[in-house]
Image (cartoon, rainbow, N blue to C red; front, side, top):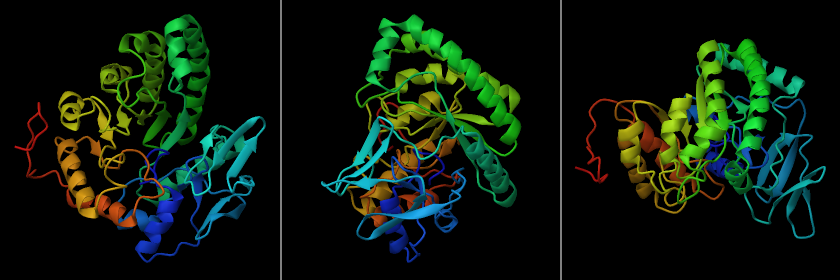
Length: 367
């Protein structure tokens, strides 16, 4: 819970969860100002038997932001949402703007991160935090901040068809700078981290946003060179976050050297968990897909959430190579009882011994 910006929990839901468990809520800290994600404290990580922790140094100076009644979050003193006459929260930076509507749980508009991971002072703080976590805890940590050699906008995917030469030229230049950054990460914290993370969405609800053959031409050669560099110069794995119906692209992503795929959106077209595990389970780690966030965790009963979790973990855990978390972040309005139900069911179902349920690979039905 909370190792990555797509495996986290809304600060609103996190406050509610802590209250539900009888834990204090006075120091809930934001680690992502766009999605309004909380830093998950070690008491929660230990309660739910979590193995991973977010690599993000604490800010030097913090203040309290009160987004609405009943909620107070610690934020860096330079993160300054301003409320307008519509009771919307607005963040502006130069000509960019993002907004949280009244009663909302996150910001939309431009993506204005609280920090620049590559700013020298912040990067050096991150190195020190990685060393501390490695030496003082048993948690798995990963470094996030690399470019995946494709954009996540419709315009970018259109350009992959209409202007491939331009994008290939751009990726050539980007690769040079990203390999320098990768060398810096490997040299300064390679012994402390378990993975490096890239993020970019290749799928929508109904299918991929790019054909595999186009991806192979424009993006894959550069992604492969990046993965090869990481694998040849460190023990770190390469973690890719990519939402949506990406099953047709998994073979080329595996060829490029992606070790871990997240969030495993089982509700998207072609993302049947049985088929995913059967076809790719020996070649890639599935990190996510443990409970359906679109149709289950936020709207069903705790009993139904637990049932969905057991069903999905029964599939993904077969043969190993699986890390549990829900499909993407836990949203702000998810009931705390449902969060408890999902994580407790996952832990109770975590052993790799006898699996009480088998599955028909073609139909996905219980046998």
